[in-house]
Length: 264
Image (cartoon, rainbow, N blue to C red; front, side):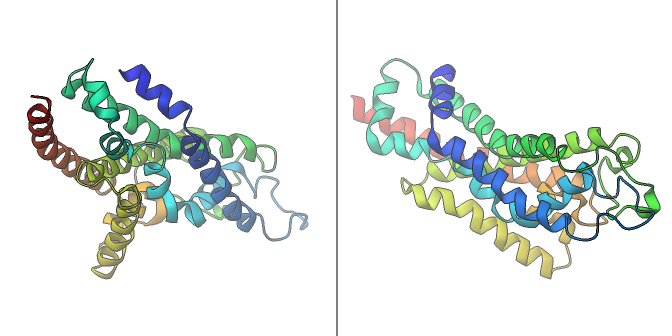
């Protein structure tokens, strides 16, 4: 069952489209970062470097669309299976519980990879255009703060790996949110759009309330505010994930009962 669901993701054009779109959304930020003189006398050769380019690109355009990228590959698959009748065919050879768990795990993986893979690819490609080392701290254009930021100056690659890991977790959580919505509606556009709307609505409300570090974008890009903490990043994500799982569990029980009655 798991292999079948993973295969569906791997051959899905939407999965690869999400990865391609994620990479393209990183380019404007990299171009913006690259603006300015490159040959000023005495300029440090590492002034334009891969680590700052990565963070700059992450916060420019990509951060606006991460909920869509996370849900695009597979989050609406349950709604599609239910509407198309594919779910009934699956339940003839597997239990409903096994089906749901396999779909949840696959969707979680797909959402995480949809955000992590473009970042990994961008970081690798950026080595062709930017220096692979940092300038002195006083000359740097960016000074990361928040979780794991103490790694940055001594182990910048490890810090970038941490940011990619955060992006994977974020994608997995928001893909789960999208799938939770798909249990309650068969409208795929509602499934894909709702996490995006909630993401920006919560960002606006919490920002107005002076709780910037708790906003959804800072769960994806924790270096975006000075007072970001482990709790503000992973606590917010844990809340979204737990709520999504509860929503799925509540609807799944009713769905299973309905399917059992229809099969009688």
